[in-house]
Image (cartoon, rainbow, N blue to C red; front, side, top):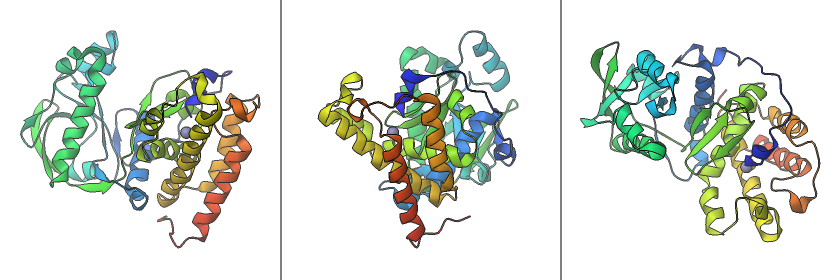
Length: 319
Ligand SMILES: [Zn+2]
C-alpha cells in the first residue's frame, strides 16, 4: 500500500483506539500494543500458510536511537533504554508473557550473550536499525535451538527468565509516528503509521492491512521486484512493471486474508475497509496503466473470491 505515501489526503478525524486489545497484555503505549498484538496473532495462528517459520516471542522492542532530542533523555529516565533494548509490549498469551517478561523490562543478555546498550546502537548513526534488527535476529537464532535464558533489568534489579520457543510466520511489525496514512513492507518488517492506525475502525480492519503487508514480506515481494528491476517510482506504473506489481498485490491480498482468517478475524471487514480507504485517500480513479495498485473493483473481486474459497475450505477459524 505504499502508494498512499504520496496521497496523504485531507484530514481524517482521529479515532481513539479501542483499549480492550491491550488490557490483558502489558504495554508502555496502547497504540503500539494494538499493532503488536494483531501482528503476533497473525504470525502465531497463520503458520499453516507460511513456507518458512521462525521463533516468535510476543515481545516487541524499542531502542534508544528511535527517540530524538529531549525525548531521548526522557526515554532513558522512563524506560532505561540506555542500558539495552527495552520491551515495549508483551502480547498476552505469548511465550514472553508466559515467561514473566513485562513491558518496561530492559534486555541485558540472552544465553549469556550481552545485548548492545542504547549508546552503542546510537553510535551506529543512520544504520542503527540494522544493528537493532541484529538484536532481533540473535533472539530468534538462540530460540531456534530451544528455550533461551534472558537477563533483564526491572526497577533497578537484574533477574533471569526463561523464554520458550514457539514457531510462527515471520510477521514483524512496528508503529511509526507519522501524519501520512501509510503501511508498507520493507522485506523484513511491516511499518504502519499512527495516521493509518487512527483510520482503521476495528482489529479486523487492522488484521486486513497488517496481513496484506506481512504477506509481501513472507512472499519475498520486495526482493522479487528488485530482482526483476521494477523501479520503485513513477516508472513502476508502466507495461510489464505494472503487471508485475499487480501480481504481487493480488498474492498479498490472498495470503493476507488467509492469515487474518486463521487468526479468527472477521473477513467481512475487508471490502468495506478497502472501499473507505480508496474513497478517502485515492478519490480520483486513474487509468489502469497509471495505477500501481489494483483498482478498487479488481481488489473487491479478489477479496470476495478468497473469502468464498476460505469459507468453502475445511479450515475453520479458531474463534
Ligand atoms: Zn501491497
